[in-house]
Each structure stands twice: as C-alpha cells, then as structure tokens.
Image (cartoon, rainbow, N blue to C red):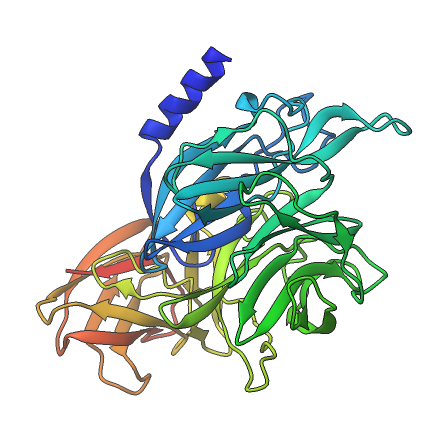
Length: 450
C-alpha cells in the first residue's frame, strides 16, 4: 500500500501540464465521460481515462480499460491545466485492480470538501453469476484538484455505474446512478451514505440501454439527461420534472448518434459566465477503436419553454483562441463546399493532431474567435507544406476582404515554417479565413501571430 501511495503522490506532484486545444480539448491522452463543475470561478472536468489494455489484463480484449483519473481545469475553456492523476485504482482497498474498471466519475463540493464519486468492479462476487459487482466509492479532498483519499468501503446499498450527485437549492443532496435502469436516492449530510432507499426513475424509454445520468436545475425545472441506445449506438436524451426525484417526462434529444460511430456518449451540462455548455465524448483521436475516446465541448441553448435545442458537434468547440497561440485551422468553424479535407498529421500518432488540406483554387477555411489582445501584431508564422508549391492568403471576417498576409510556399514534401509580415490588423476578436490563391494543393498544420 505504501508503494502505490508513494507512486501516486509523485505523479500528482509532477503532473500539471498546460494544454491548448479545441475539439477534442484534451489532446495528450484519451479521455471520456466528462463530469464538469464550476469551483471558485474555474471549470473543473473529471473524466475517465481510457488506456490501451495491457496484455492479458482487463475484463477482455478490445474492451474499456481505465486505471486512474485525471482532472483538468480552465478559466476560459480554451487553455486547460492537467492536474495529473488524482486517484488510482491501486490505492482503493475494495477494487479488483485486475479489471481496470475505473469508469465514469463525478465530483461535488460540500462544506469546503470535495467528494469524488467513482464506479469500479469490486472484489465482491454475485452469488448467482460469480461475476464481480460494480460498486460506487467516494474519495475526499480539500481542493478540487486533489489529491483524493478514498474511503475504505463503497457506498452501502448502491450497486451500479455512472454516479451523478446533485445538490438542490434546499441543500438536500441526491445520488443518481445506472444499472439497466436509472436510480436515485437521497444522500446524508456526510455525502457518503444514503439517506433513503434507492428508487427507479420511471417514465423513461423501456427499450435500449440507458446509463450516465446527469441532473441539473434551471428556472424551476429539473433536467434528467442520459445516453440511450434508441437504435444502434447511444444518443443523448433528456426528461424534465418539477422535482429532483420525478415524476419525469421524457422530452427530447440533446445530441444525435455520433457521426464517427462511437458506440457510447457520456456527458455533463453546466452554466459558466452566463452561457450553458455540453461536455461529451467521441472517438476523434481513435477512429478505428471506439473504446479510446476524447472529450469535447459545445455551446448549449434553451428554447423559451425550457426545452433544450439539439446540439450539433463541432470541430471548433468553444472559447477564444489567443492570436499568439498556435491556431489549429483544422478545428474549423466553416469550410468551403469542396476542395478541403482534414487528415491526421501522423496516423501512427494521432495525439499529434490534424492538418487541413486545401486542394484547389479558392478553397477556404474559416476559424472564428481569434483574440488579438493588442494592435501590435506584425508577423505571422505558418507551418505548411506544398509538394508543387503554392500561395496562401490570410483574410479577416469576410472572404472578399483584402488579404492581411500572402504566403508563398516553396515546392517540397516536408513541413516548412514560414514567417510573413501582416498588415491592417486591429485589436479585438476576429474571424480568420485562410484561402488558396491558385490551384495547387497546400497542407497547413497551424499558424500564429506575433
């Protein structure tokens, strides 16, 4: 126990890293099941952590494999801090560590303490099937970034996965979880024991898998949101009620099935600085294996009657990108109807990200929300490649505007980093447009200003 605890402490102390990204917004590891909360003016996201299954370990070959949790935080939804490992399966006494089953967690603050709720396969066996039982444990910390100390036993009376904790306006806390159905029970003030018997939430779709509940309140309505397999893979749906325990009425779909064909989706919803956001996952960094997933954010909006408008996943995501940072135009806001494609820089290392390929004359990509914090930007740097050479123009806000920079790319198959002067730039937030000036194919990795 001392050995594992020491390793965990070292990982926590050295683990913080700054990540600049759009969708997916974590690009140095696989992440899934994002649980997002606002603590102290920052957004903290607690996802599960997909890893390739070690040989001969885990539940079975080509299945979900997770052994620890990280937490990520941001005050602008663009620049993310990875606080490192906050809890490892190896320091939880009741977990069967051969199963690598640290699935979707949640975290809540109460009375100055932070409570991390997590599911895992326990050493306890089902008396009929002989299989390990999924239980839900609690780990406690003094800070949202941990480190978290797990309680020696899971929550009594709870079997299942995907915990979600909601604290109502009157201070009563509720625990939601799933296991074939979605359950709810009150929590005691200590946040580690049930204060009522679990009850199944009724009036939800009877057919198809339901899991991953997420509950929030807005304008007197309680929203129970959850992934559900209506057809072949999960989509995000929701039900509404005037009470946190129901009765709920199924209301609609938040996000359709993944266009990338990721079998699962798991999410959270929060309000931050006056805007609502949907956090979710897909398999953009692992298109051929959907058990390695990546978390994303897009804006969410409500109709006047309180219903949720359907969210369409985007590459661009949310937040402003500082002009001095690398602007990954492959995470575009808009593209021309033809002659633009996106591909991995290196298909053997997808964490290296994507490149934009402009195939023909007047092909263009638009990247919205670039923040020029001052009017002193004079130069542009671009990482690009063009086998037969090419010319790229950079414009702002409109495709028909005059270019602020014109970059001539020399012929060659290797990446080139080219610096160019820019003109007519003003302070403020602009939409950036990158377009070809002739019919030669150009590949672009990123660009930035200084």
